[in-house]
Length: 327
Ligand SMILES: Nc1ncnc2c1ncn2[C@@H]1O[C@H](COP(=O)(O)OP(=O)(O)OP(=O)(O)O)[C@@H](O)[C@H]1O
Image: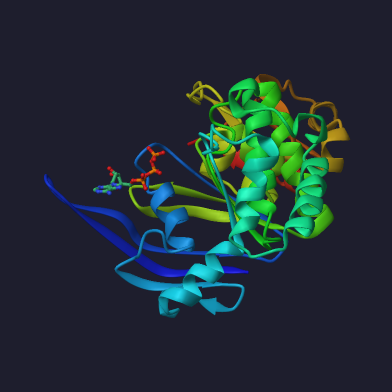
């Protein structure tokens, strides 16, 4: 649905050129929620703004729903932008218009007749759970409600792509969860493809099907969230399950074990200890809900060198567990 290919963007800043996007490629499949995560300055906003060409890359290719965005003439690009919904961290609502008016504003430009506009606004407010707030003004709303208005407005032109620019960064954890649930529902009910940028692991963990980690204008890791979590050495897994630094004691082997879904129910530690008559020391770990799946990561210590533990390591692998052996 969204193909970003070899995109490059250099800002000519006063202090010298800044490479915000350095040969970035990313594909978002139709109906997928894809998250780009990275620290401030990584290039996330530039990437998101490139998708609807609010920022024009210096080179590369961007295709959204079959349209080659960088080749579209200005009028066609404007029309296409209307079909790509955007939500922002600071909501961007008009303070002089009530909730219904804010959503209607997005429909005015589409040329929909007045009566149909009204019906569509009511439908959109119902969708985001704000039917009772139609006559309220932004100043009277909570942050979560403001973002719901933002989402209703973004959906006004029935886009099939939604771009989310840190949509939950200004919200408390509980409100964040409810907004993420709403996005997930819109995704599953309407097949809405969502590309979001965030600096919060929580967002990736809760709703993303795929994720890309950005650093210094580059994508350093990308893939399905579940697949990344079990990939040895994955930064996403390290970010989601921060474990203390592994400093193996002499004559021990430290192993990080990642288990997903059904594996989480297998008592692999006691089985291992029993099968090989060894003591297994648990050094740390956590279990998280990732989407609707339980994923856990445990750091365990086995007596003896990694060579001596080869059978034990093979045993764990045979049970479908993903392992990383600390050097
Ligand atoms: N208009 C601009 N002119 C010059 N440099 C810019 C401009 N916009 C962004 N940059 C620089 O490009 C780099 C990437 O910025 P960008 O805003 O895309 O990153 P980000 O990951 O979204 O960070 P943040 O979350 O802080 O917005 C940064 O070094 C930033 O200073």
